[in-house]
Length: 326
Image (cartoon, rainbow, N blue to C red; front, side, top):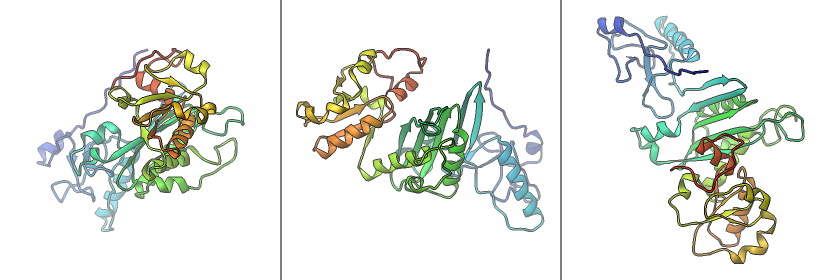
């Protein structure tokens, strides 16, 4: 099977003939009331450029929900009612066979391309791999999530998630949080539906907020696999020996979590210690224990599961003793 994700391009020949302003992305420029550059003409939908809600930059998002809301706003304005389009944040979902992919807000690539306000300079990201509901209830499916947030105030800037169940639910919650200018500290306290077959007492949304808040408070700083390639840090694998034997990153030392406290004296105090495990939970415990004992430790966010995702290898492939490209 061949999948062609070509995208769409606005048909704006009529707008050009009418002398309307066309933006750099090829869409018709409109303001918050959906006015074009000609105050007698409104435009909505896939052919218009609007402001990105997070970055404030001009954006082109051919999304049905966005077009619907723009049409409603234009109708209100035409009939004299005050209304204004807030901007688009690109909340999307797609299903490929059994896998659902969803996202909202800015991606890391779009942040790094951002020119307004230096957004690309003031963000952090975290990865997590929670189940879509509690593990003891049958049928729990993992969700891989990435949350991007401001390092200045914790404001949520974007999120992506991939999994078989419960993906769009979590992205919808985060999308609304972005709309309200919420922070990762708000995600910590978000009250969501809970019963074992639907979620967990700490929903994946809560866990994402907790991990990010721990980073901002300095309780549990994170590192990323791209950092490992160029670092002189001590790399510590806290998985069990049998897991380590199946594959590990080059140069890593293996001290299982359960024996870490008895072996802290063997660890260097003059080098940063980057800790990893399978998904990031055991390495979180390890990094907390190390930091509380005066060792400069960071948790490699997302663990080996994120490592495999960044290498884009098949899940069944045994990891090689290498690090992913930066």
